[in-house]
Length: 576
Image (cartoon, rainbow, N blue to C red; front, side, top):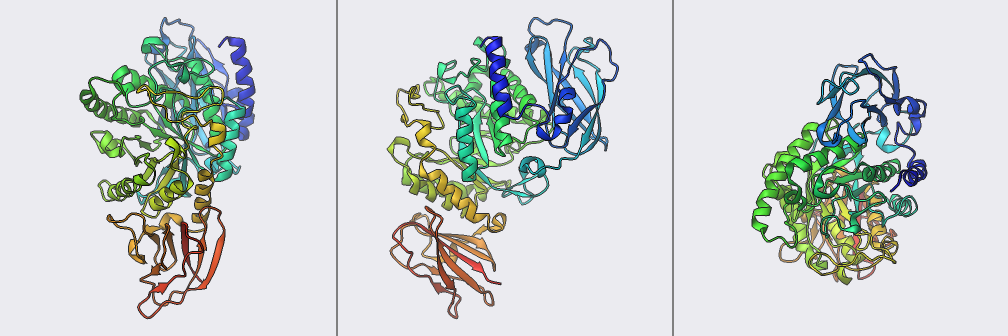
């Protein structure tokens, strides 16, 4: 992309994404924050201004020319908060002889900062100091009002920095940074739909994609590829184009779960190059409320590899090292996981590099139910304790199957089995099919389907999962625990398509009832607790009131037959 075209794109896209600087509420400081400093001394810069939990940005220009600045120089900025706590934030190479830093101060007050360059003789980059005056955030943007997402203290769900529970309902946009999903129109249209349906997380890859060979044209965006040939250095213009998309997600209240690359890039690039890749990602996007995913299918070799056993061993060791590296340079301590071939725990050699377990459980429609339930319940029993969620299962419509009934089943069976969230996917969105340019075949020669994303985003499963989340948010959903014994019959390893029960003892019972030709029996109802009940249609959100629950002397209640022969949710709420 030539410089004029790029400026035009960034002007249009930047307005749509509400800017790169200390977004919206920090407009007062924008010009100061984006100033490029090129002083030839280490005198303090004029005070800068920012807003807590908003991103502010500025640059440093080197008068000394480097022939390969990306590989020759690293620049960090060390911020010291009012309590004296330091955060060392990597800056990113922005092209030419320019480096930029992005910082989101966590709280108001006066901060000081100083630059640290790997070339201490360069006074343009090393030893520059200044102050940052940070005011309190007073708006209602959820990710700024409550702070970024972290693992909650119970190690079972997620919450914001201020302790507000965060419901993970993810969507899968693996190739969402490529030019097939155009910005701003296409990208904004898809984001608006997901916000309207209640999604909170977008799983998206930082340019090094699955299902294609290296430097396949399908992986490019408006500025080309994320790396130059031979992986000699990054292409900063690619990441400029990616910036506006990531920033737009955040502006809409969607948390980017950023996947560094697909797992097989590790044998191709090596650990050293992928450390540089991750350093660039963290420098550009670490100041935003993001979640890190080290890789997709971390231990899976390339489809056509002739050394698969060696690749698996190399990848597990490599992602462990990279997990430690990401944790060491991320000043914000965002949660870290890895997208797996089965479960994240088995993709690395040392589980301590991960904060939560992400699962992939199959694409075989209802045949994937046993694998999904077994992996969720199995992971929840493993040590160390951490949140568990299904990060990929049965993209809606993949291979002509896995329609909305399967999507509902996977959501409710996972959540009521103890999952800390759930990620949906639609075939056609993850690979960004378009009508004019279907994605086409994978390296193995097969094609997963050609449904355009414009059709796929309207498939009913996504909205129906949103209805499920909306119901759960009526209650203290983060306190819900599995209680299969609360209903008869209930699921077991001999039959996974029987009811699933969970809830809060003495307060709430949720029973997901797949197609059942008999009346479910609710058991172990607490003496002295009065419940009212209703059937909830997980496909439409409609309710059928059942009135007051009248248990027998043994604490059991025979619920009415579900309104239709389909899946339903039986809800028992404690009455006042």
